[in-house]
Image (tube, rainbow, N blue to C red; front, top):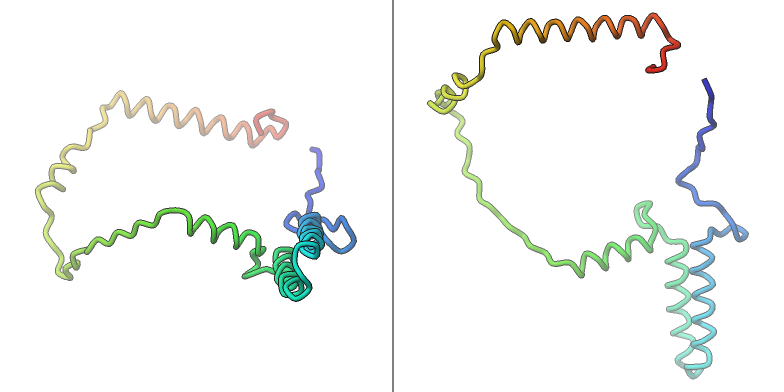
Length: 148
């Protein structure tokens, strides 16, 4: 029997660019590029607050986890939650009584409607079960069977 090595840490992303994963590097580089473009668009008085917001957003997207869920996933789920329609339906249920009720006529009809098994069907079922049992016993004795 061949043995295969199973990866142990499949939920951990690979560190590709220094201590950053590819996703983290993309968010950080995207933030740097947007800040560089904002430098040419805004005057210095407006640039610094805008750059701070952009840097905080890029850092949150790259490194922040809320309840072990990455921040981009939280943002995506929040977006889709706000875009989909919400329908809340409330149905009042009647309180269940604590006194036991007697069996109704419908349960009697259900019990009477169960089909009876004829003797020939019963013998066919017993024969097929015996065959399956003997087949399993032969598989247990022969481990080189191709079905195991």
